[in-house]
Image 1 (cartoon, rainbow, N blue to C red):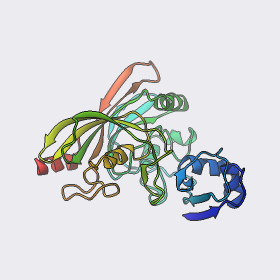
Image 2 (image 1 turned 90 degrees about the horizontal axis):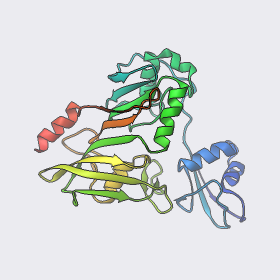
Image 3 (image 1 turned 180 degrees about the vertical axis):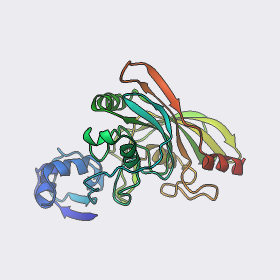
Image 4 (image 1 turned 30 degrees about the horizontal axis):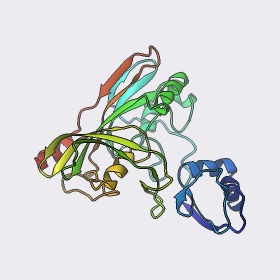
Length: 297
């Protein structure tokens, strides 16, 4: 990872153009992608590529390492919930990253999908074959994988229009009240910790609806329906209101009951690309999360 900090000495230049000129290893297009992902900030805040800089502005640039250029098929077992000619619905286990990135270049869901469907190597993004959404590495549950370009475009459009219904089961420490509500707070890259997200001014709109399923002593088991899809949204929002996800060492604290965060994508609803029929698929709570519930009950 490479980091730069610049102090702007002349006003009027667009942010993406300025970064492209100051960082010769970045094209303007690459700079725009990093800005959109929150890796480039102005005065510690997320910004748009078109922002006109002022004299004295501080521009921080983080250039993450490049992922591998080719994806290798791997014989990693997939727990398939549903399959047709257009898509797979899989139950992703915790500990499995969705696609290659710095720190886990292999042994990902994308490698497993390519091992199961070698023909996907010729379809779309060679590093993310069929991937239309993602779950954090240590989040388990229902995921969609497209098997062809038309299905991928259709499913991606459903996610973009927010018509896909995503439901999570989440355990937090404390008794969350009221028992039903919506958390609304913009999310962006944490200016103090670049690998984390945070509730920030001028971040991207984020809304998370929740409902308490049950109280377990001094814990609350929640059913969460995110209305937007920001990185780490559920974890960031719950931490921001003082109820971090149990076991989430990044945004809360580690738990003696669990080796990872209690976050499970329990149900996913969408329309089949082939027929337009609305369908919903569920993934049962995995054993480690069931064990955690038993230990606190």
